[in-house]
Length: 367
Image (cartoon, rainbow, N blue to C red; front, side, top):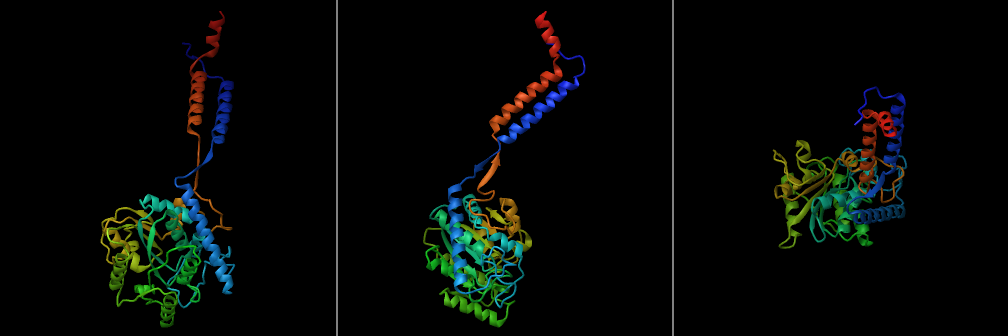
């Protein structure tokens, strides 16, 4: 072997650099979009969510409810007002706008599949009026995979949620149910807010919540204290579960106190999927924590910006992307077999140029 005894010439190094750039270009050319698992179900769910959102927009137009184009630039009708009589808490407008992307239904399909939920499984659901678009995405995902939800709502809503007393979340839910877009709706509801009984809204606001439940034919949970309200929820979930069945998952949307209890305060449950409840002291054991103690996987949809980053969803998109869009549907991947071949070729070329005296080799061949 003719090992190099002299320094590598500049021309050889330039050649290596040029070839390296060409190889980088070729590698980038192999980058392509790859469909993610459960693509068809995710797409079907997102399209169903899109259809439901369009129906709500039509219903709002029929009722001559004004849409604020400043707070709701995409004019979805799923962004409410800042303050109303049934507004329970502060809200993050940017997070609410983020939920109006129907592709979130694809994210929820991904979560359900990861939690092991399949067709025919029962799923316990708790949501509030704070994120109506996310409620739609969750129900679209559940119906698409064929699971059966048992839903308990909280009527009140935080800022920018479904806080219009004339068209609150239960009204939206029933509207979609009556038109056959969805086939499930709430089996019970609470006023929501502090203590799950509207302690932080006015008496008039609480009365409006009762009227909303009454006109939609939804039984109202009213208890003397939070612990009793949570126990009533657990009894309702048990009542609607057929004998011999068990819940495959518990889904929480938002921050309803009867659902989350103190889980968010003590950091016991992170947004997303929790298959095993972490040990800890939970002063308020909401329904979510109690299901966790029973070994039921938890899907907590609360910190929207965190989940958006995790699943590759845009923050407050303008305009709203049509399905399929987002990291939950596609991921960019290199063709590894081509990249490996190019890497081996370049490594071989580099070794030959730097370590072997090629001129000496050819001089011997010709002599």
